[in-house]
Amino acid sequence: MKRRVLAMACAGLMAFGAPGAKAATEIHWWHGLAGALGDWIDDLAKGFNQSQTEYVVVPTFKGGYAESIAAAVAAFRTRMQPHILLVPTYATAQFMTASGATVPVHDLMARSGQKFDQSMYLPGVVGYYADTGGRMLSLPFNSSTPVMYYNRDLFAKAGLDPDAPPRTWPEFEAAARKLGAGGRCAFTTSWQEWVLLENLSAWHNWPVATKQNGYGGRDAELVLNGELQAHHLGWMKSMMDSGLFKYGGRGNNAQALFTSGECAVMFNSSAGYAGVRKEARFDFGIAMLPYWPQYARGPNDGPQNTIIGGASLWALTATDDKAYKGVAAFFAWLSDAKVQAASHQRTGYLPITLSAYEATRAAGFYEKNPGTDVSIRQLNLNPPTENSGGIRLGNYLQIQNVWNEELEAIWGGGKTPKQALAAMDQRGNVLLRQFQADNR
Image 1 (tube, helix red, strand yellow):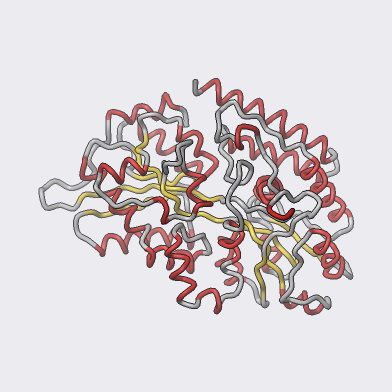
Image 2 (cartoon, one colour):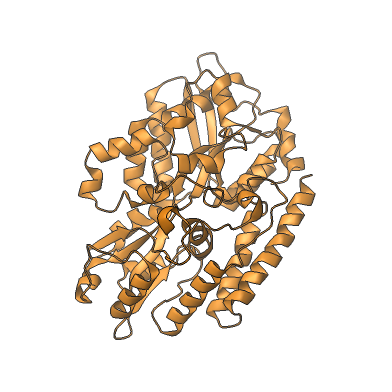
C-alpha cells in the first residue's frame, strides 16, 4: 500500500452509524479470513457487542488478505475506509510508512483512556509489531509459528518412540528413513518459504537480511545465501530424490498429505491444529522443529526461537472520537485473558498475552491436549535476537513469491540450492530498492 494512497485517510472517516444520540456507534472491521476462522471472527464481534451497548463491531470478509488491503485502498479514495483492518505480517512495513493513515495502537489506547501495558503481551509477538522504540503499532491478532506434526501411529509402526520425536535434523533423517520404508512419504511441509527460510534462519539465529532483518532501516539487504540455508535445502533435495520428502505445493496444500495419512510428518503452522484435529483419523503429536547442531547459534549451541506469522489489527484514521474510543474498547476486550484463552484453544493461534497462556495452562488444556503448548514454548525458548526478533521488509509479499519460485526451481532440479539462494538475494534486493525508492 503506497503512502500517496493511504495519506488520503488524513481527511477522516465518514460516520457509518445510524443517526440519533442513543444509537450505538458502529465499528467496521474488514478482514481476509474465511471458513472456520471467519466464524471465529464473527463470534468475537458478537461477544464484544453483547458485552456492552455503546458500540457495535461489524466484521466484513473482503476476500483474502490481498483483497482486503486492496479494498481498503479503494475505500480511502472516498473516505469510507473501515475503522479496523486485519493486515498480514508481510504488509507491516507498508503500513508503517503510511503516514497519517493509521493510528498506532499505543497512541490509540492512550488518547482513549484505555489501560495499556505492553508487558502483558508475549515478547515474541510484540516485537513484530513495534517500532524502533519498542512501541506497539498494531494489535497482534492471529499469530502462529511453525511446529512439527507427526503421526504417532506410524511412528510406533516404524519402531520409533512416539513420545520421543527427533530433536535434531540428523535424528530426524534416521527416523525418516524408517518411516519411509516401503516407499511411503516420510514428511512434507506447508508454507515452505516461512518454514524453510524464515524460521530455519531464526531458529538457528542466522539473519535473513541486514539491518536487524529490516527493523533497522529500509536500506536492508537480503543475506539468505548462507551455509546453513544451502546445507538445509541441499539436504531437503536429497530427501526428495530418495522419495522421503514430498512437495505438496505452496501455502497450506501439504496439510492434506498429512491428514490423509500419506505422509508421516508435516511441518506447518501451529494454527493448523484445528484442521489436523478435525481431519486426521489417527493419533498425532506436536513437537518443536528440529535443528542442525553444527549451525545452531542459540544459547549453548542450541536452537534460538522461532518467529511468528499471521496478521495484526491496524486502527485506521477517523474523525469521530467515539469511533476511536470504540476501537480502543474492542482492542482492550480482545486482550482480555478469557477471550484470548478461548481463541487460542479454539484455533491453535498463539495467545497474545501471558495471562491467557497461564489461564489455559491452569485450566488443564495442555495436559488434555498434549503438544498444544509447543508453539508458545518454542517462540519463547530464548529472548529474541537481532536475527530472531522478526522480519520487516518492504514488498515482502513479492519477495516471498520470489522465494517460492526459487525453491520450486530446486525441487524441479533446475537450480542448485546455492544458485537459487543467490537468486533469492539478488531478485529480492531489487524489490527492496524499489520499495525504498517509492517511500522516500
